Image (cartoon, rainbow, N blue to C red; front, side):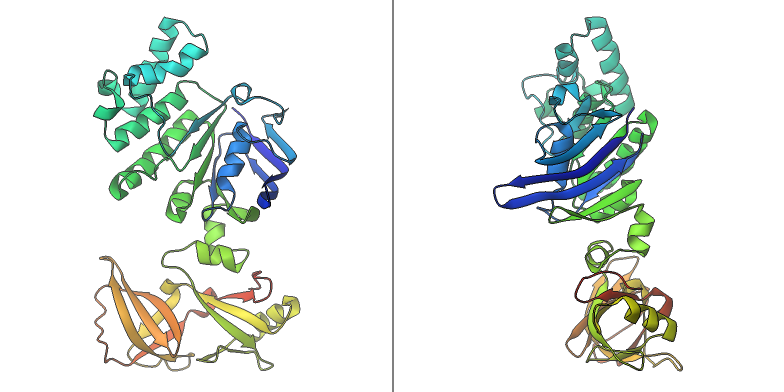
Length: 362
């Protein structure tokens, strides 16, 4: 198989810089996810690796081979697209066999490879059907099978599950991850769905406006985001963020409330911050809600704005003056709009960001 390395890759379309000095490496057999909002450059990165786009600057290696000047067919990669791209007039067998025919395999080799891929994907009973006779999930399996039969060094996947319904997408996430582990093929997977990225990726590269924001395992992306963008992009419901001023007495003044910082945290933040303007972050599951103020802890009065019952949890949307705060509580928590509520933040779970740079301070 193969590792993939991108060194200082830049790609520009007219006056839009799609990739800006991108550095990445996917180890052999690793599942790497490119995550970010629409237009962040993730599909452009994938197309540059595949050879469908040529970088303006930088180097791309597959294995130990520099591939910048190689045609797509010479790179030994297989792409799986969002649209499936199946031939409607061909049977499933013919769709799977087509890339092998182009590679001049014998009929016996083609039959064996197709049968093996079909068994792996559990689509043996579909081989004589045409795409219009298949469900969305079955079509996706056929598209994956067409990539598998080639036995490439690298799988490149561009939002392959986005056309499936929610239940099937969850099922296919697990199946696809299991399949990749069984095959041991280095995979780069593009998505804008952070849940997909967190559940599937060995490592995640988060992009914004063509610039790499963070490149780490999912757990580190979530617990130690490098900046306010990453913290806000990963996590559901999203993190609560408040603009604050760090005062001399180690107090964070958010206008609607004041939050006292531990001295060590405040001093560490002040030592690296560009100004006294900070952003306080706290995830909804780390906001404690009660009907009485907690003694000895910073508590803030809040009014109930609306509730979001999700079955296993209840999301409370609370207001502290003009600030909207999301809190995650037990679904049995009984609350009425007339109730006086108090919220506290888990001190060991707060985040501090530099207002000017967005960089994480603590």
